[in-house]
Image (tube, rainbow, N blue to C red):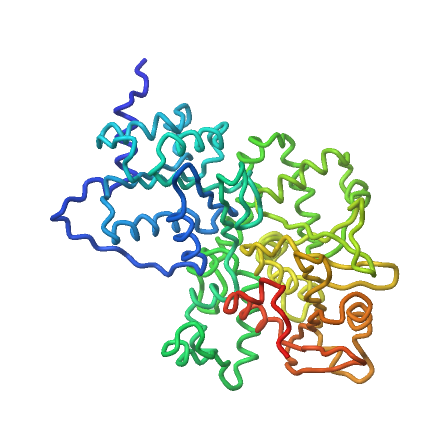
Length: 485
């Protein structure tokens, strides 16, 4: 029986790195697919890596991590970096299974005679399939100080918060979440139809962007498509004429990948059926408060096992847990209850079918979409919600320094506060009690106006428009911008 030789492995690497064959005379033509809004942040992270520091790009399967890495390769070659100084390796390739990172990388270095001080760009895709990958990657980075090491992964990232440093400051993680609402519209080509972007083109990002007259119903229709189908590129690029994705996306796309059993097994989750049952229950209750006791009773799963499953689902970027505070905005010492959100509302549609905008479930999916806009921002860790006997607040942004409520959100998809019979007493009481300088938002279906109740200024804004602006104006996601008088 023949064994796989180093030369065989290198030939596979050559296949993955076609740019190695480029010469000075090669006419290079790049396809230019639309880039995600996170690409500039990724480029900055890549260029800051090196001198022993590494960059991790983490996010759910099918979020576009591989595409972004290949776009970075094209960007480097356009910058006149030698193609023979760029290395890409996908660790899902079966022939690499028994080979460690160092061996694969040194094959490349030997073939092109790269000395220890060479300026190299090294990309490892789906690195979680390599045992002890963190230590291996950091060791390589230390040995090659002028090389920039970048790793992409779909589970088990050092952190689920973008921009957080780990491993004594040597590892930076960027989170690539499912598509934001702004990205969804750009991939579909609908942003320019709904917004006047002329000023932006002449004045740059600081130019004013206005929604076109009468566009709000169309924006809400676009938001409805986003909620049901918009989290992943397949749901955008494989559409039918009515704007819905091809049925195979729902049947074979998200549903079959949602628990990626190969990854679950790697992280010690052996009962796939039990995990599937829990995930379906959590998905069905997205944007609701759940407790460990209720989950244990509903699933029959022991609490210790439940904790392991919840950590795996969050580490795999399938759910996001949000902590609870009380009526005084104080955190509980024991977090036995929490709010759970799918990382993309379209996963709900994949599991249970698309939901109409008038369905009673839709406000929860709209809230899920709101939270998903923050998944790629560092401030996602500051999210909370309030719950107490007889009341609660849908979503709160806590100030990172004071841990007081900074932005306070209530979802009013049915526009009930547009009626004189209903008043937003709960959110006003909460703001007056805990931080009168907090910015309270009532996110509606179609109402846009300022308001005031007692001493509290309120902003009523369409939820779809707010989701759009969150990606347009990053200060909305930083939460702690000072109030402008």
